Image (cartoon, rainbow, N blue to C red):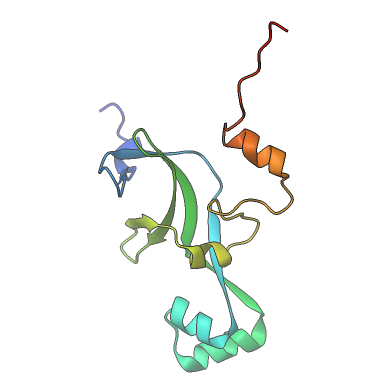
Amino acid sequence: MPNKRSRHTKTQKFNCPYCKERMWRMGSPKYYLFYQGKMEMQKGLNLTSKKASFLANQRSTCVDNNIWIEEFFCENDGQIWMRLYRGEDKNIIACLAKAEDWKRTTKTIDPERYHPSASEFTLKMSRNTSRSFNLSQ
């Protein structure tokens, strides 16, 4: 009975939302979503109004450990950020991360926008739009 304790059979695989090919995890940290205020907690955590107001009075933010953003790689489409949700049956459901999800995480930078402290030269060089230089001169 080899590999009877192996966990590799339980590993869930995710498919690209664009080309339906398998995506690979990049090993990035999980960026958990947080909620502030009574209404966000009630909607995001599926709580009753009474429980949401109690949590809002106790703490300013509440982190949901069942929803996070993680980086994946697709061979056809490249780097993709996905929003993962762990349901009650322990299965993980994946969908594309939205702009509002990025606002609810900490220590993350939205990959769709450029960093405000980056110079114009750095942005041009990162997009490979620089002209070719003649090294013979």
